[in-house]
Length: 310
Image (tube, rainbow, N blue to C red):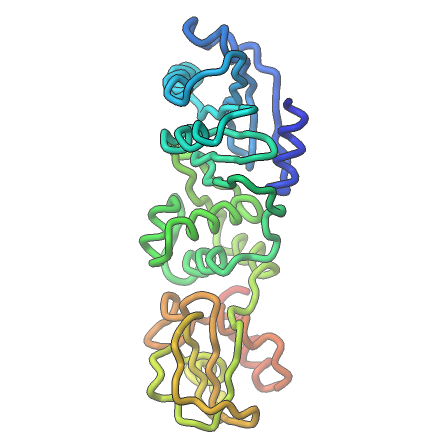
């Protein structure tokens, strides 16, 4: 069963779960549950937890009471390893917020911000998600997110909790391990230079689409980007206007023209969250212009990179 669990975790999350024999952990169990569970110490994403295997089937509420007893004794999160559980019981386990894994079926571990149900997904996405990039850039450019959990990040950035949760999980798996604060997983960053060194090879341009036009776009509520932003940060004069807007922004009355001097950039995250006085942030600007052929642009971008410690 443990081998099946390891294979499932690797297939679903693209990482390894470490499982240890733990006689001491077993000895800590209260008599009321000691005969019904075999426990192992386990670790996933550098977070320790108690893996409890039920020897005698129980009701969802019975599992809930048992988990509370086990957790009070072992002092770390408890995750049930289950097999052959009816769908209606899984629904009730989830409503009780009981961390549990059913290999081949689901992983519900709110303690680790993981909720994968009724499917066999691919490994964790390797390319940085836009929300994870937004978290990193906000931490570097606006205000520290050290010690913040998914709920706090969602409130600060104005994004959905589920989106923030996935962003933190990706950061924890691919960049900087998360820390546990009671039952919450929180961001933990090294010093700024180390964050930049790790992040600069992972960050990508936020531009998902570019619309060029000869029309006036001054009416569009957005953030100055591209050469228009570079105009504000350097001595380079922009030939037209470039405005960045968030994905999903409705844009009307624009006739596309490949030779137009004005440009609308559609970004994967809202540019205004990181903007200063209506101008896009410097790190996002660098990412959007890194592949430009114009030597003048490269020269100014190099200056900005030096300025921000890139």
